[in-house]
Image 1 (cartoon, rainbow over the protein chains, first blue to last red):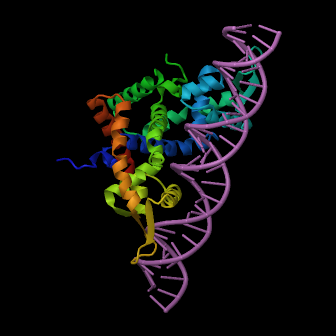
Image 2 (cartoon, rainbow over the protein chains, first blue to last red; image 1 turned 180 degrees about the vertical axis):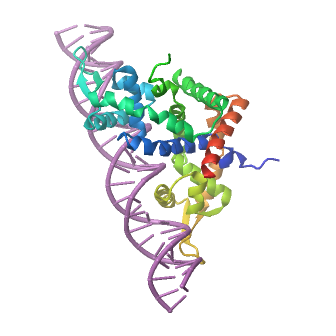
Image 3 (spheres, chains in turn red, purple, green, orange; image 1 turned 120 degrees about the vertical axis):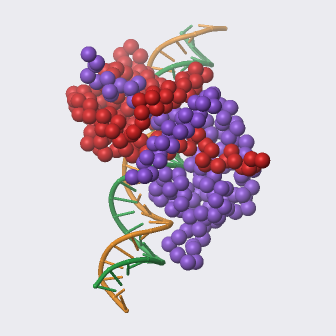
Length: 146
Length: 146
DNA sequence: TGATATTATATCGCGTGCGATACATTATGT
DNA sequence: ACATAATGTATCGCACGCGATATAATATCA
């Protein structure tokens, strides 16, 4: 018979390797992002901005699956670094319009090498990467549609 | 031709869904672990202890892919909660021997329901769960053997 | 219109994670 | 034996991530 506590063994968890790999990824990015004066979380905020050009805090929170209590201080730091600007929406003054500064836009070119540097550090096959991606988004999408 | 900045799009990252799912998992566990007076990280520490019965900080750090500056305060909190005890190894006084208290041992029975509660919240097929597990450990093992 | 609800952002406190560093103990080499 | 290195743990400072709560602006509805 199976051991009573088998379900509580670390090796039998799916949550733990996700947690550990997530920490590992942040560590891997650090040396590359240090050169851009960005943390990992700041980097993904910048990604959204590079793509959207202009956005607001609410959109960022949803795109990154974060809460305002995480994003508000992040935006403050990015503004202090001179990468973004925050202005009030004229039509709805609750709305915080976030735009890239010149330095913020220029950062995108310097960031171009990051994805390939990171890719070299992980050795998954194309199929593995795609399957991992698919399963993770299945979990995220499921959560979003609740 | 492919857009110049395609590699910097959030949707083209593998790192981001791992990060987002990891955060999601911690949120999912919270209500169940609150009843045990454990955080997620404290929970995985307890898992190692339930399995090993006795261990030291170094073993914990390696098992959980964490550094001592994370684990030391964790152990302090678990001791304050009365779940573990810390004593010096007689043979090597650098070594911190960590053991479960009676309350710590009893907690394992109360934790037995957690894995199944969590499993119900995620809807992966058996194959998807196994493949996810395999790929994540491939990444972790690769890192360990460096 | 005016009370109430909703929405978007911000603040507070706590618990991680981590790089850098310090400290005490043991091991090592001459 | 004794200076030096290695090892195991602890401390410090910073940046998240989040639940709870607050605040300001807009929407809703009697």
